[in-house]
Image (cartoon, rainbow, N blue to C red; front, side):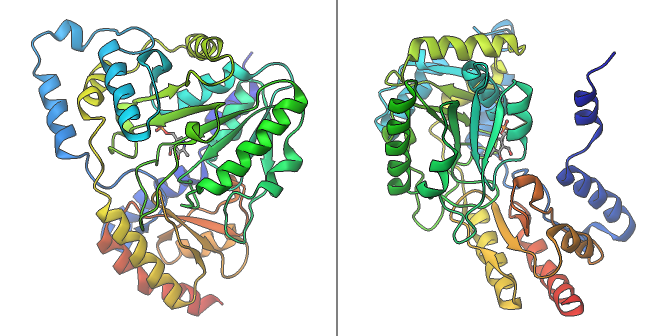
Length: 394
Ligand code: PLP
């Protein structure tokens, strides 16, 4: 006997994956240069030179037993020390190495954190548009998914939208900023209002309601924007971080959970995160990648290419008559379907070799997500196809 739900989950590819696979097939048929694939969020900028050099020097180390061996489940002490120091220098975080639990990226960081909080009846709030894996993760650990619909006026965080969804069962709200897929970067005032609301609701319900800050895009910000460090705004914040996007290392699977001392029940919470990770099969984060981030956690990404892509695509599409949400962070841009449903528009776009996933799985019907982590040349070459798509179908 098998678990039907898991069979279904495994058998069904995500819409984004489907489109990506379709793109590969189409490239073989019509030539790669004629297919405009905006589907996938795989960084297109190589890892910074210093990071690549550090991987090479780790590979050349003579103490291979150490570099290929297990570390402690929490991560090597020297690595946690370096990252705590970096957080303190950048955000005055007052982090200690003991607050950091290294994981295989942000996804398992989120799973371990939510499992740690998932008492019977637990509800987790997510804000649309959201990373499509959130509902899958929440259901897998036995939690209830509570969705705050997208505020399509500006896709920002509005406290009055969130308030009705906070109940006595709310354990946490996931805040993903810079946001995938909208590129919106929540600002301090909105986060402070959220903190106030959560303090009030925590007092009413008699238990802490946490913010889980999902931050793989923290450093990918433009136009002078900054993503506020949420533990400095709300004490009961747990940060799930990853270097997948910032240092272009998604395949290396390296990230962490940061449980600040100031968070309610912080020692128990940290232990529960570690316990949940263990129960989910975590042994340790990849050792080589840990030692790389020990040396490279201060390296900042070169965001010039993403920045240019974002501007070129926004300008090109809006001049053609499309409506887009101007992103200040991450490497995505929302596009409003100019005719039909987002799914219908996405299907029609395929006829023009434009691969653009609809945002239904992101909880945002009527919109599509364009990945801007693509080549600049592809963006320029795609614009005539966008033009024809609109002119011939509207
Ligand atoms: N959270 C968000 C918002 C993401 O966009 C992604 C990946 O695309 C993840 C988490 C997972 O990141 P990781 O590769 O570090 O597991």
